[in-house]
Length: 126
Ligand SMILES: [Mg+2]
Image (cartoon, rainbow, N blue to C red; front, side):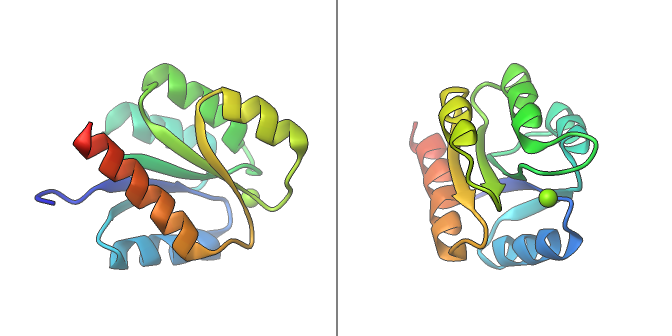
């Protein structure tokens, strides 16, 4: 890959956010961090990302709402939602709205990396 794929990671838990950013960085991704959904929207409006990894429960704007707004800005942008609570409502309603996957914390980091890799590969191979 000539250019690094870029991932936007969004979480209000600073430790988690920094850890995920570090892991993705080690895997070769260019990582941008945001602490809530509203900030994520600003970043999506202003830049090109290959994938978004976003927490659901955050102050200011949560992940489900932010995902809906992201889809209005860029319908092609793949969003993976992360949650500590797996509510049926989240899985059924949000998967319809273009969420690529929902992963439940604590999750297998390698699995999430594979999902991001898959998103980038699909995007680059059309
Ligand atoms: Mg949270």
